[in-house]
Length: 184
Image 1 (spheres, rainbow, N blue to C red):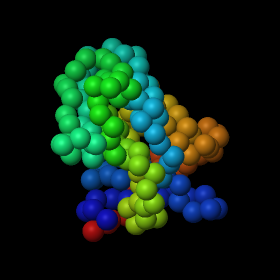
Image 2: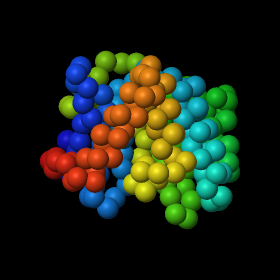
Image 3: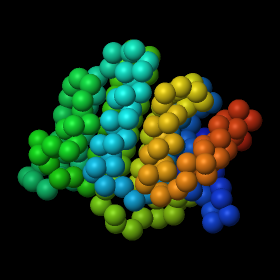
Image 4: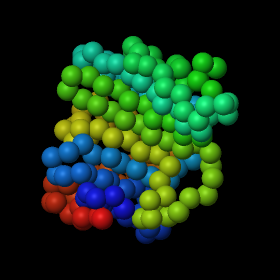
């Protein structure tokens, strides 16, 4: 585990979502193990772009594609305008094993990271996540970015939105009650 504060939202079957904070005043990263493909990443990024448009904030986006199937192992695209999600489904971005999409405004940075290989990974508690969304805490508690995470989790875990909301609320209460634990 990296230094910082960690929390796992539990179900009877075990942790389904993790939360990470560098500190209680930092951005929140929600992470999980899901079935994620390139199209799923594009949908998550597109929904984040729409959320930015709802805020009225001007933003730019960029994409880093890792493990591409050509002579380079990493490609960077951006900064660009309001449609980097369309790049993810275009032939401009080569096939990749993982990618990081970053949407940035003056007040907010949203980061989507995903590995799309489907390769077996460790358990969630051992750092085996393959998808995460990082946002400022106020945007997680309320606002147009909370549904981005809700829909991403529900879609990639094939989980009912009511159950996903309960897990996200568990993470929210763990922040409020300062139940995250230090990692090293």
